[in-house]
Length: 270
Ligand SMILES: Cc1cc2nc3c(=O)[nH]c(=O)nc-3n(C[C@H](O)[C@H](O)[C@H](O)COP(=O)(O)O)c2cc1C
Image 1 (cartoon, helix red, strand yellow):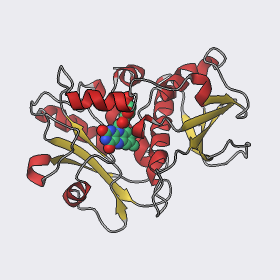
Image 2: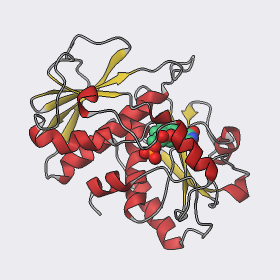
Image 3: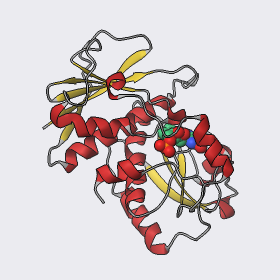
Image 4: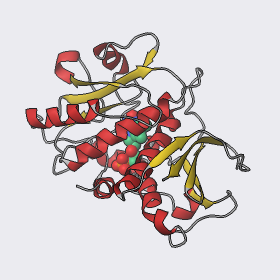
C-alpha cells in the first residue's frame, strides 16, 4: 500500500473484532518498529504488551488485548521524534490491515509505565492498541468521534502559508507540494486540534506549532509537539515516496508569528 493511501484510509480504531493478532502480523510490526529512524536521531525502545498479562486497560478500547508502547530519554525534541516514529508504525499497521489509536490520556498510565519498565529519566509519551478493526464501532467510539469532530479537518488555507503567515496558500498554488501538504492536513492529532502551521519558502518548509491552552505540563512536556512530529512524518513520507529526500534543520527563519505560534523545525527538500 502506498503511504498516501494509508494516510487517506487511516482513522483511529477503538473497537476491535476480538481476534488474536497473528504471530506473523506481530513480527511484522516488531520488525517495522526496530528498524525505525527519526530525523532527530533520538533512540526509542518499543515494546509489545499484553493487557491481560500486565493489567493494562484503556477506557475507550474494546476487542483487543495487545498494545504497543515506546519509551525514550526525556531529551529536547523527544516529542517531535516520538510523533514522527510512532506515526510510521501507525501507517505501516494500516497498510497491513491492523487498526491503531494514538493514546496519551485514556489509559491506566501507571500500569503501562510499569510494564515498559520506565526509568526515572525516561518518558513513555503514548501507546496504541493493535488489532483487527470490528465491522461496527462501539457506541462510545461513535460518540467520542462526534465529540472531537474526528472526521473534519481545517481547510488548506488555514494551515499552510507562502513565505509568511500573511499569505495563505491554496492547494492549486501549492504545485508539486500540494499532495504532501494535503497529507499533513489529514494527520491525526490530540483532541483533533491540528496544531500544525506550515510556511513554504521554495524547497524549504517551516513547521510551527499553534499552541492550544492546556497541553503543556509544568515540566515543559508539550503534547502538541507530538502532533507536529506526526505532521513532519506525513510530509516527509509523502515526499520520499515521490523519489526525493528531506533533511531536517532547526534554523528559525525569524518570520513574524501570529499569537501562540512557535517555530519547531524546517524540512528541506532535496
Ligand atoms: C498525540 C495524540 C494523543 C491522543 N490521545 C488520545 C487518547 O488519549 N484517547 C483517545 O481516544 N484518542 C486519542 N487520540 C486520537 C485523536 O482523538 C484522533 O486522532 C483525532 O480525533 C482524529 O481522529 P482520527 O485519528 O480518527 O482521524 C490522540 C491522538 C494523538 C495524535
